[in-house]
Image 1 (cartoon, rainbow over the protein chains, first blue to last red):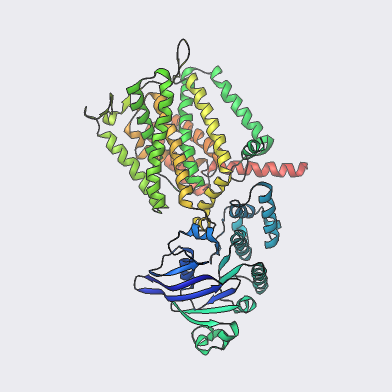
Image 2: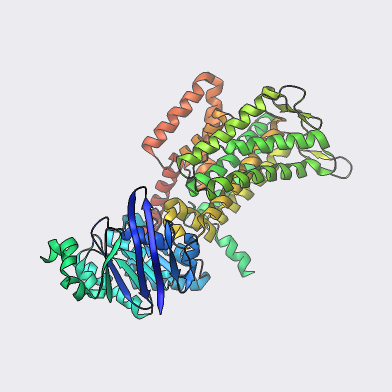
Length: 238
Length: 354
């Protein structure tokens, strides 16, 4: 069953064709990685899916429903959730309060406290809960935001470079985190540059280039594809 | 019953400075002193204190919208003026019998709030934010000032209430409580003092509860990162609009009480200087905390008045200097800085004692 379907999605900024007739289907339960060189249109595609940008033409279907015209918050209510590229935590608030804000619309009272505790454990941030989120390390901020995104119990989790700025160990831990979430039934679409992460988690990979779907397949197929190597993996895998 | 208690637990929380028996003990002490104070003072001084208290509501409105919500409104005086003029028009037309002045207070505040619904709808649902919000709100208050200043002719009247242009409206009846025998008139001394003090305590505590509730959580979340707040499923436009309207009502309350206090209201109450001063009180006190805002406003107002007596033309210059110094030395506010410092000392003291 397809959970997300992008049909002939176009977005222009002036004369710049940022996404060009993008067709992409995500199966429920898969971990799908979106790769491509800078400026390929990956983040724009995310913003289209989230409703921060509106496509010039094309449709976005989520669980069979056309959500192209919906406002962002309404899409979140349908079961979408996102972790942004630049950590989007509430910097001036404590870690605990960050999670409370994410959880409070679904839980109240003692149940809310329990959920916050559970999430702090999942993220390994118990001892940092009273800290101001702006003072966390970069990796911890990334986890905190993943935690906030996950706390909505989304059907589809969008991750924009979840491991940017992380050490190899942290990257691996993030990969395990994503796999655990996926095992619980969460579908994941991740933009990622870190090939170790992609190799660790991705069931399928889509390569975006100049706003178009350039290639699609398993990570091995993508790495074996010489055309892809030419545009993107050249430097790393030559 | 438990729900009722839960509300009171919200008096303390991450959004407000001050917690525990020490803080509330001090609060009770200050309140007791405020209650007893008119008994040891003269009518003029008490009236002057009422004047200070009146401004705290508009300061709190700015604290809510700007300090907590992150939207700088430069035009809270628009709501102040609308409600002040509203009270004047209503009471000059319908008098003060049967407790109408109290109803007029409520109606005037409601008119200001309604205007905020309209203005706020276009601003927030039109996604106007940041400095543009400040520009739009400032333009609105200056426009209202200009408009009211040119209403000197006899053709400018609402019912029997003349608008009087630059000289403003005066001689509206003070707040009057109907009472068997003789109605109680709250002149600008002890009577009005207790009413305004009561309102002040109520508003302060209600805002503490509001800001520490889940609603308050969303408001500060929008200040910290509006995009993230929306992507947690909150329709931030709605939250911003509600905050703006509550703030407008508070500014309106300030306007009505000011009009009641001096029995006059003029267009300059919506002018540039009037619009800028609350920003200074709130910035100097600490815009992101209610208690700091109240203390800061009262201290700066008292200092400003003292300065005006000894050198009127320098008082405004001093206000500007004070704002610059605050921004440079304690960008989050001087009072808030001191309170946080005291809080740290208290925490260290408790740790050592424990």
